[in-house]
Length: 171
Image (cartoon, rainbow, N blue to C red):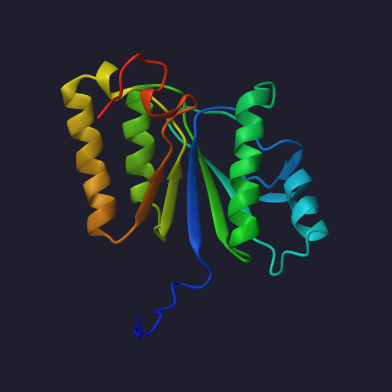
């Protein structure tokens, strides 16, 4: 393919959606910008340059909960991966309660960010076979807004793969 590569925005803006935990040991400003902590130290030790920026956006009454080690570990892995692959990225962790209503709320809040992210990562797993059709239609409508705006959305299959704790594959 001899097509020219069109560079993306600089720096890239990446948002990952979380439903619990915190970001390990971290120091936050009043507007939840991470200024120091494990993740910043790690990026420095790895020679990531320029350093990414990392902030937290609380949605729908969420709060940072460092006593949730599983979610905190996943959050650190998400931030670390994004920052390592995208030096200088503007990273936002959008944190919401772990409910289907909050899923729609956080998706809408992320879509309404200014500036909008270029990439959104969602690691929330829930079997579609358990979801009411109205919820799936609402999720699809919001995700279509992202697609229409040219925003890439990456979604995990769940901790147990495509079946996500069910005995059959979901569609």
